[in-house]
Image (cartoon, rainbow, N blue to C red):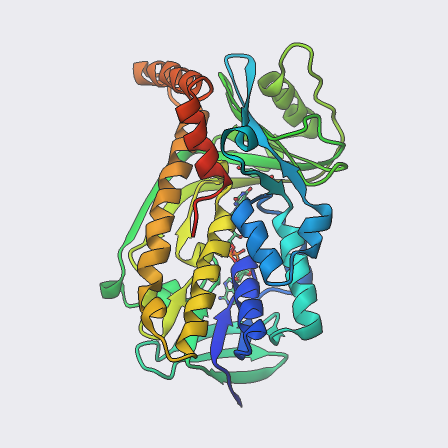
Length: 393
Ligand code: RFL
Ligand code: PHB
């Protein structure tokens, strides 16, 4: 058994864990990151694509913003499409803010690169990761790594291990309530090697269901289709996917360009929030504490927001000021519930609710009314712009 000590033991090398480890390291606070997947697996994982202005500012402030500054695509707004018409919502014109298209994969690659040169140790491919004694001031993490058993002692453990991690379940059930809802739809997402057919993201409500056109670069497009959650990816040939995308996204005078599909998968949609992000010496950050449906592009940005708040609170703690650390859970969850509301609103406005009932047809027409209002009232567009580009920390 190898015994080690550190200040902060971080579980998970996703964006939350990597950014926290990096922020602490820059402040001279020792941290160790324990991850159960391989570095190759993490670098290949395709997920979110849009960074709020505040997330970009955070990456730059922490010295890991060169990639996003060089390769990020700044977008002034988005398109909302419904009833066969496409409407532009110009955030920059409405409120003077923008978003940046830069894949989560690239954020993670930049962070791993920074850690390699001058960062916290990362134990990739760890097995049987478990947290102990979280209700005491000296918690521990045990794990196997390259045939050795490790016993890592820390002042704090941070669960940045995503929705399916081990940290949230290690909080006694009497200390935590889960608030959640599921949605009767899922997203089929593809990556295609073809220049985007649009300059900014298109979110579309069509009679057949939601569709979206996003991108990763000027060479790679990312597109999504609403499908049933029980749908199997085997039922979706490339041809069927492109046909559905043409049908849903098509407007007169516009062409959707097809390309080779290099990745396709189906992601279920869920909203989930824990009642607390703190139990004793354990703190949760990112997807470990909350999940949103992807329609508002908030998952990655929320992880970055949590970490920004938590890193500053831990830095204060080591400067003998505990106020922010004690308030972390309340502050992060307060912001999170606003994001939950926005993500739920965007999701319900833009997806076709399944079923053949009278409600179903009523809902669709009511959604068209909501979209008509949202794209024609300056007040409504400003509200959308404010939330999509990111609430202040
Ligand atoms: P992550 O990225 O899930 O990272 C958690 C890390 O913890 C590791 N881990 C463990 N490590 C050690 N021991 C254990 N027992 C462990 N269990 C897990 C995992 O391997 C992983 O490396 O969480 P983090 O850092 O909080 O970041 C959050 C974001 O990843 C997430 O919010 C978004 O990607 C959500 N999301 C999307 N958000 C968007 O805004 N737009 C999107 O298009 C979008 N697509 C997605 C997504 C999430 C997906 N998931 C979770 C299945 C697509 C998918 C497929
Ligand atoms: C993406 O590019 O993957 C993406 C963009 C915006 C969203 C969701 C996903 O709301």
